[in-house]
Image (cartoon, rainbow, N blue to C red; front, side):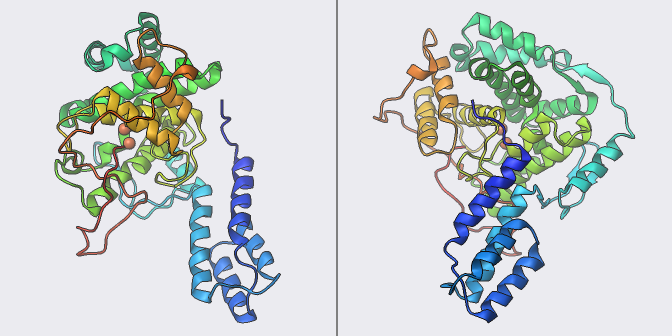
Length: 402
Ligand SMILES: [Fe+2]
Ligand SMILES: [Fe+2]
């Protein structure tokens, strides 16, 4: 089981990465060096830059000044991601239109503290999720119908999932978000419930520690709540997404983080962290911060998220992947290091009869599945990209299935 990285550990790995990156810079002429130091300190006076500057004194630099400035910018981005200073590209509003944070706000510790202070002025009634509207009934239908009836076929495990879900309680405004999705974006409503159940199923297999299991229970049910801040026209678009759409859609991670931090009165709540990080990847290829995902619970949610996206019909892809092809796709992603391999193996185990031990579950290297035709999904550029006017129809990624 991978431990969750503490802040000092994160800082240490940031330092290490900065050092590795700076080995290429072995010194420079005095002018370049001075300009470089100025740039570094203008951006931020944190340690990677100090390390970098110290190393720069040791010899002649092979990079010109512009390259150094670009380099400093890259390191700044890396450092900012470590420091959690996400910036909002769009405002975050509650369902009733109250603006929690404006576009352009940096999600610093102080900003989040102030957000929590404001939410402390309100009190919200708390209710059980499974007692809200038709949630319990809908969750049973998902588990009973293809393709999930096979995955949730173990009655003991399924009973445990419902027992656990029955303990989940939310404040009324979060339950209202379920109601909003049920009425306006049924795919997202179903998806959120399915990923919750999948997370709990996989957590039973992968997590022994009771405290960590409790984190999974708290984290699972609202990973995509930020989509309540994305225009429905984008969420339900059936044609390829342009860059503006991609930027709006990727906003759901940071928006979910803000919404959940506000309603749960805690920016470190596992549900808020999961909403923010479930599109991050183990090899730092995700978004919004491009961090290397090292949070066990979020890794599980991320695999369930991709799996459900593949085997469900989506607005941009009327026909879903079959189970075989979806699991092949996940295995490929695990092999390339983007998602966790043992989480994928646990999922494969749930898909096989008699649920063999996950360590014995492997896919053959021969790929036999065929992705469905008419898949208009092109992936999301892993950053909050706001296009310049007139550039809305820029090039997009192709072939991604997450
Ligand atoms: Fe998402
Ligand atoms: Fe999702």
